[in-house]
Image (cartoon, rainbow, N blue to C red; front, side, top):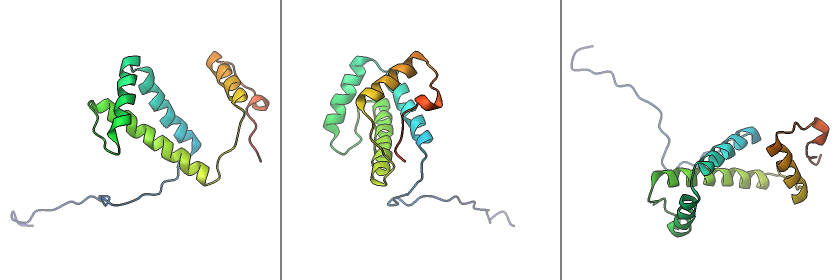
Amino acid sequence: MSNNQQSSEKIKMLKHDAIIIVKISTGFLQKLQAVLNYFIEKTTPEDIKRFNEEVSQIKGTFNFSEPWMQHMYIIGLLIREIEREGIEQGFSYEMDIEAIEKLSEELNKGTDLLPDQSPKQPE
């Protein structure tokens, strides 16, 4: 190869108008939820209030006053879309709110749930 010829490496890029279908496990969804909860726990109540105010005003744009707000919003949108698709595809079940609250209390206490104590899912 002469000095005038350059090797041009290429990488695959996604089309800007692509709609990508991805299969995501519940375990991965829970990890995304944990990331969002981490952001929320590290955010002051005043910042959460500002965030909620900006969310109510963005109307389809991603124009936030601070980058962390956009990041938190995008993770929330991703979680909501995964949950919506899961419900639409029949991967949901109903559980009494009391049972959820009890389970949450037990998990917050650090109590180990035995397999027969875990919430029952429909067959």
